Length: 167
Image (cartoon, one colour):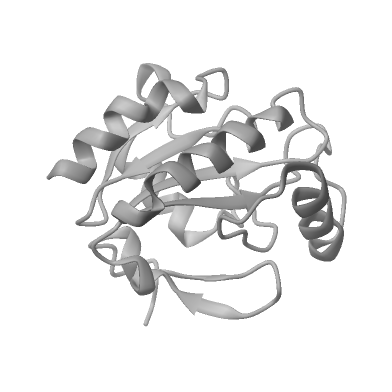
């Protein structure tokens, strides 16, 4: 499937897991997602802990955090996928799905992020991701219903997540 031509929902894309396996995001169809571009050497790296908390709190209700490492912002994710996985596991006990490093801006933007950015624009209508830990809330239909800045605390999203889970 040409992922740039058919963009009905986030579930129509595939991505490579941090372990190197290409998976269809269709496996999350019917779930609520929080998709986040992450980095291990960022001032916001501590957000892994509340992201994990959200994942644990709501996973039984059909909610998943999906982490997409990105090295496009001041080289804050220079590690290999294996090193990122080890860091997240040892430092933050991350159990939510993590994916292989991607580009979120520019000509090599991952198709999923092209879709998310077109659906939920940033400040003043910008599509560009400004920094690591930008968050997209995706509803059960696979539509990006909100975009949150890196400075937005993950725990402050609880009510928005709960609202989407009730739909």
